[in-house]
Structures are given as structure tokens and as C-alpha cells.
Image (cartoon, rainbow, N blue to C red; front, side, top):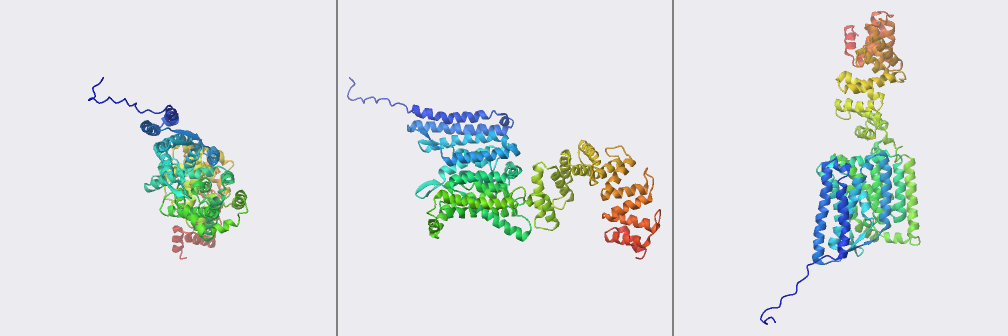
Length: 626
């Protein structure tokens, strides 16, 4: 026996360990971390070192978190688990988002190329969601809710590959906001902000403050949806499905109605459109269907939801104006206001109840919720149908065509030049060869934007390579006067011009072909071929063609001098508006060299030329005392 004076040896305490159930549960986040790590081997990811390290960094962050969680669970001997809880609103929204991606991506293939990166974000968010839950609670609810959060975020803002780690941070921010930023509402603790709108707003603010929009695809995402024909109708039909199941119609209806009225007022007083190519931009239209209509973060009352929607429309309109005023890309308008509205929902509901809204809603108590929603949907269908068939939205909208803004610019309408420039830019991004030519002309003119011959040459070359004869002619003109443009591209442009000259209908191609033969640029110099091409251009009404015919007939250069033909060409050029031709014609009529002398007509022509700014004509009139 041990002496009584010696203390008894304590029994060994077993080391803390995680239960077998807990270990099996943690296999799930570990598997997703390995999947995310494996996705870094995709060719798309490996081709960009910064994108590759973004994936590895995200996976490493999750692995470290999992390590800390495992240690915490081991020491605390907590039993964790998960439950499969599918929520109808989540999987229906996910399907509706997917349909938007499918249709949009067919017309902007970068969307399809982005699919692996979107999938990586979904894997990342599911892992974050379960680790965050188990760090604070024992039961994780597995469902489809993370998919619409990622889909909704990417429908409005992507970061370019070099900055893709910010995409993971944006997704993480949405999850943290949903978990930690909460309030009591109707006696229940719930998140305040729409998760995707919360992170989109914060990161949009960061991009604005740092003037870093260029590191994202924000502007391209906001505009390329318009490339898909009937995209407004597609989004509308998708929205109807969501509205049918979740009674959020009044928010969409209120927002659209507010924008409808505000734009009608603006157009009435200015003669132009506020939102350039549509009275409701396509990305805003998407936002009022699938961004601000989250039932969890919107008012409970019907009238409150209507007010919420009206406020969204007004705020989008005001933010677009304000952002444009300070030189910030306007596509942020639909993103910045949603968290502000989320903060207002309890106040809106209280205001509705205090203001008699409860009594008004009680008047419809004999209507079922579904029947009332059908009534709201009927009003929304009627409003959208009106907007679509009157050209208020959609590709038939006058503001989507450059002709409208050219006319507005000629009339001196407010910001018409800026909006013409932007419409042409959208069309160029969409692959329009004629728009590239028109935009190049704006850079050559220097009225709407500062003159930039280098950019003009690039746009003319792009237009020419796409088969536009106007672009080919302007590229040739730029090469002639400014010695700019890739020689090979200029040669191809001339080939196109010569091929088109035989079927020329306005004289442009024939004129530039004549210029090539006259100057020996890209063609062996040949005055006879130049004369033939210039004559064809003149006959088709191209004024400068008539001027060149007159010069060749007047001065020869291998062409027999023909005064009668010279006079006929000068007459055509003068009647087409060339006042220098009036001056030359007047000299022929005064001298009677090869033509009947006509002093009175000559003086009349000199006066018109002088009034038009031809100094030589003014000097002749002064010397003749007239």
C-alpha cells in the first residue's frame, strides 16, 4: 500500500477529440476546398498568374478557417451537423437567373467563358456559409440560397481576371453582412440587407472612390445585355414567374411606373431621352426584377412594397443624373440605392400602418393573397405592354439609333453630342461596322470629342475590315492626307473600294478609287481610269467627283482639255454646294475661253462665292469695283 501521506495519482484525462459524426461532417467543407483548389488547374485560370493565385489564396483562406474550426470543435466537444432545407424562393430564383445567363451569353459569349469562375464562386460561398455557421452554431441549413446570391452578384458586376480576388472578397462580404448585420423585425432577428446588393453597393462605392471602374467589367455587363434581341421581353417573362410565386409585383410595378413618369416629363421638356438608348436601361430593368425584389429585405405590406418600388425608381433616376454630373459611370445607379432602401423598410411599414394604409389594405381582405397578386400582375402586364409597343423600351426605341442623336445634335439639344458618342460606342462594341465608321468621323471632326486621328484611323480600319465601304473610303482618305493607317489594311480597303465601285450608288467609292488612280496610291497612276471613276462619282451626285473632273478637263494631265466638259462639271459641283467651283466657273464665263461669255452670270457667281468665304472671289469683285 501507498503511504497515506502521499497524494493519490490522478486518473489520466483523455485528450479532447472530435466525434466521428463531427469528423464526417467536416469532410464536406474539406471536399469543397479541394474542388476549389483543383479548379486552379483549369486552363482559363492557369493562363493568368494573378487569377491562379486568387484561387489558391481563396482555397488557403478556407483551409486555415477549417483548421481553426476543427480545433475549436475538438476543444469544445460540440456536435455539429446539417439539414437539407430547400426553399422554393431560392431554387426558383436560381433557375430564373440561369435563364438570363443562358440567353444573354448566346449574344455575348464572354458570359459562357465566365461560367467556371461563377461556379468557383458558388463553391467558395457554400464553403464560407457552412464554416461561418459551424463557427457560431451547431446546425447548418443546406439549401439553394447561395446560388442566387452568386448569380445575382455576377449579373451586375465582375472583376477582371487580374483582380478576381476582389470577386471572392465581394462574395465573402455578402455572406458576412447576412450573418452579422441584423435587426429585430416583427419580433424576429433577421438580416437587414439583400446579401448581393449589400456587397455590390460596398464594392461599387470603393470603385467610385478610387476611380477604378476599369478593373471591372461593370460597364460591359450593364450594356451587353442589350445585344440580345427581345431581352426586355425575356426579363419580363422571367420576372412574371418570380412574381407569380412570391407576390413581389408591386415593387417592380412601382419602380417601372416611377421611371415611366419621370422620363415622359424629361422628354417633354427637353426633346431628348434621359437614359440614352432606352427609357429604362436594360440593366436597370433587370435590377427592378431580380435585385431589389428580395421578399426578406423589403416591406411586408402591399402599399409599403409599392412605395419601396417607387422609391427605387426615383433613386435610380436621381443617381444616374448625379453620377453623370460628377463624371462617374452611371451603371452604378441601380446598385447604390438598394441597401438604403433595405434600411428604410421598417420605417415604410410603420408609416403605412400609421397613415391609414392598414385600413386600405383591409378593404381588400375579402380577396385572397393570390387573387390580389394576380390583379397587380395584370396592371404590370398592361404597363409593360404599353411601354414595349410604344417603343418606350426595347430595340425599337428611337434613342438606340444614332440618327436620332445626330438630329438632336444638329438642333442643339442638351447633351446630344455626348449621347451620340455613347450610342455609337455601344454599337461599335456590339460589332457594328457602320457605327465604327461614324465614331471615327466624330474623332476626325473634333466637335463632339477632341480630335484624335490615331483613334479615327483605328476605327476606320475596324470598319473597313468588317466590310463597310464608308470606313474603307475614310481610311484611304486618312492615309492620303495624314499618312496614317496600316499599309496592308489600306491596300485591302482599296481592293474593297474598287470591287464596290461598279455597284456604287452614291459616288463615294468611285471618288476614292479615282483618287487612288490620280495620285498613284495603291494603284499605278492612270489619269484615264481616274477620270472614269471621278466621272461616275460626279454622275452619282458626289460633289468632289465633279470638282476633280473639272480639274482634269481644265488642266489636262494626260487628258484632252475640254472646256465644255469642265463647265458642265463645275456647274454640277456648284449646284451641289461647292463655292470654289462657282469662282472657277465665273472666271471661265468672264473670259469666254471655250464658252459663251456671260459677265452678268460671272458677277453673280463671284458674289455668291464671296459671300460663302472664297477670298479670291471677293478680291476680284473689289478690283472690278463691284
